[in-house]
Length: 157
Image 1: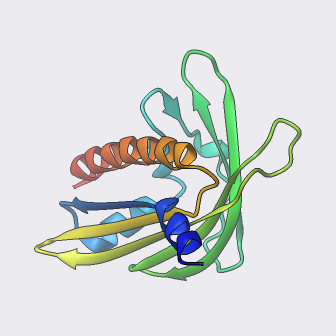
Image 2 (image 1 turned 30 degrees about the vertical axis):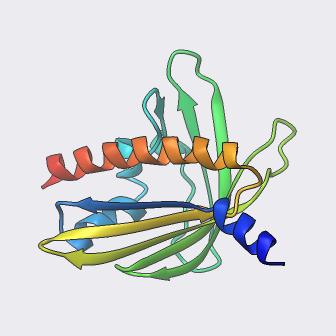
């Protein structure tokens, strides 16, 4: 039994990041579909605003598309907002669409924000994943997205 719990926690992605921006500015950047194209997606990808169908209400559905630059290949994902407590907590489910249009393996994303020394600390968790490889691929993508978010916040400031 303890082994399963341990395995589950090993399949969680946790990223802690500090941004040099007030919590309200970070919250808005994370939740405003108009700002998402400025930072969402790893290097070599972009998320066009017209692909983002979002509702910030708890229980609201969202769907978006990440497009690979050069090839134009589309990667759609969707989920449901399960907890929204501005400007501190944002929780939603996440699943990539399969080629046949069905949803793939679903994880839960939790973003917690807290004010620290004139900036904002974000604790991002996602999972549990179905494999360590999937967790690690998502980690790379989110870290690159958060690098882009930091740049967006410094330009917006």
